[in-house]
Length: 283
Image 1 (tube, rainbow, N blue to C red):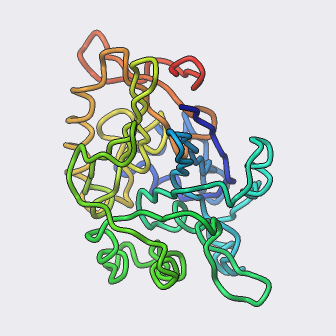
Image 2 (image 1 turned 90 degrees about the vertical axis):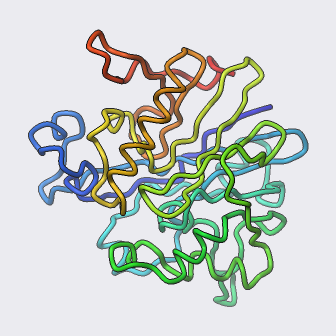
């Protein structure tokens, strides 16, 4: 097994929305905002070589959105998949699977692009793309809170092209030889959380938007974007009960500086960030 981090670019989101009920005077010490109260976040994907499969988890925002969109979210420092994969000795045709944790634009937008004729086509032409039926239906007919995050042009063309497959919603379901999935419902409906069993015996958990950065490890640090924040709180608690054994590590999709880290219990019994680690150290 091999793991490769692909940082597809950065974007900006409102700091208050990213930290929910936590006061700005607290979160701004960790992640300062600009004059418009916007914080910069990473869009970090993970490529897993598992047997004969090359599995990309999430795709970033992509480049097909219009100028109005860009003025809202300021995507920048874009890294093309052509360039990122060439550094690994690969091309886009080598990707066999794209696992989309959920369909918010910063996770799925890079799955599709415009071709020379102006048609929207899959970025990875030989890949099977994966979601689940509950989430697809939720995203296709969104609630008012998430409507601006679910853009049909980011996922419906995958289904129209016949490359989108559905995963059974069952915690612990096997996706590949060394990847199982759990499903969470606080951030959005049936978001998929990959659990990657490493050769060392450690487990890497791709947190998606359950824990978008290491700043969000404390239980109350829940995004205002979450549709069911109390469910997110419970989901974090359940996860933490299982992963303070020193053998579980968290992969942060949106953290600017920390891609992977571990948690521990403080002297008062609170779950806190333990340390930043390199993927090579946990493999």
